[in-house]
Length: 145
Image 1 (tube, rainbow, N blue to C red):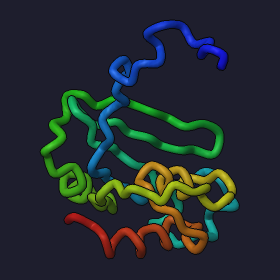
Image 2: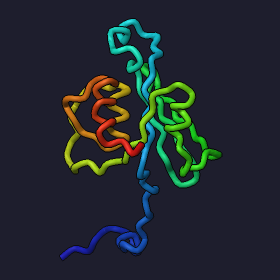
Image 3: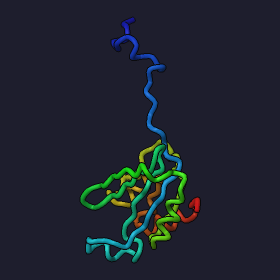
Image 4: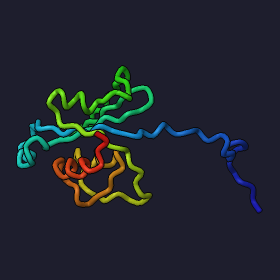
């Protein structure tokens, strides 16, 4: 039998580097604003969505735009704070939802969109959810608020 060509010590599971902490909850925000004419046919108030993920040490905001994805860290925001309640107080539509553990299979191959990015962030796999309004109706059922 041939020996394993891996370098000594690299085969040991004790050397495995732990992955980053998995968030337990997220705040999903639904917005009216769009500069894209094609999106104006979507339900008013539900033309865009983005998420904040609660991580150890603060929140991370992920805003999937048509031309880029903005990722910002908000490390001075306490993760135990009611971020969704605060955003609703500012007039925004926001839901706190659990981050789900999706089945270990390929997610449906749907076009890149804000909805698809948010679904993947929170572990939601569904062919039927394609618009921010449909996502809101689904998440309202599992909201932690």
